[in-house]
Length: 129
Image (cartoon, rainbow, N blue to C red; front, side, top):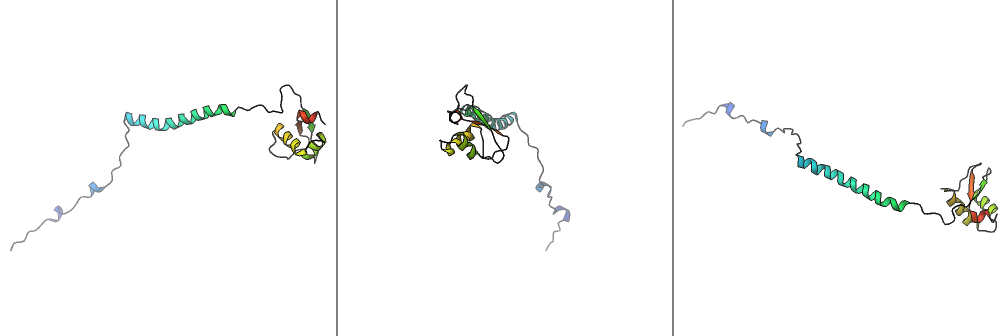
């Protein structure tokens, strides 16, 4: 019987091929155009959408505000409420309607008032009071 011997250096396997080699991303001219289009199209669409939607945001004139009408003003006293002002300005009208009209005319978010604050009174109630 014969024996064969294999040298140990020929059995070693190189793992260099298994190592991950970092690659650089390279974009061609067409790739840059496609990438720029993917970014620019949604931005252009949003810009067009906001430009077209802006025309509907124009404020319409208030029914109670006619051009050239001068409104009466009331200075708020310490501790005074909108309800008290409404009852004083238009005693025959429903105070809820008067409070709502004063809040709309003065663009008030809440019914909280500050002493010394001037409030415009709608013309329809200013003539009554």
